[in-house]
Length: 158
Image (cartoon, rainbow, N blue to C red):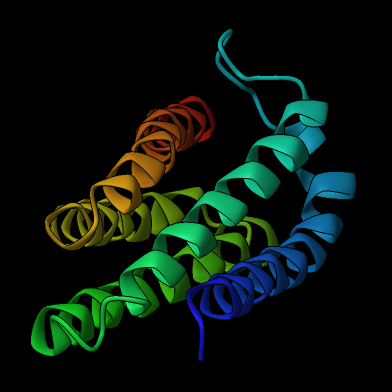
């Protein structure tokens, strides 16, 4: 299987996870989220979809580039992709915890674990393929911001 097909598989998978996370988010966004107190740095709702779409594409390309190295670095790639799948599952779980369960504290705690898994994935990816490491930096930065935002929303509404 060539490198571009591997990238395509991961991009489609990440966008699929994003799509289903978006569905989980909708009910809370429409009825519950508007009632919450938010910090002054809370971005407009229109920002989230294009940011997340871009991040899911970057994540998919990064993972595809790492997977393309499987023949040369089997053990490293397997380990890195294991962390990738864990962080992707945690990414999806956050939407359910925050918007469906309407539990900002539990979502905040989960996001700390998510951030750690993203960091570890970034660390492993950059050692296998430098471009993959660079592609994970915006994701790490955005989730850092989201962590502060989530914690602030919990604090303001406890």
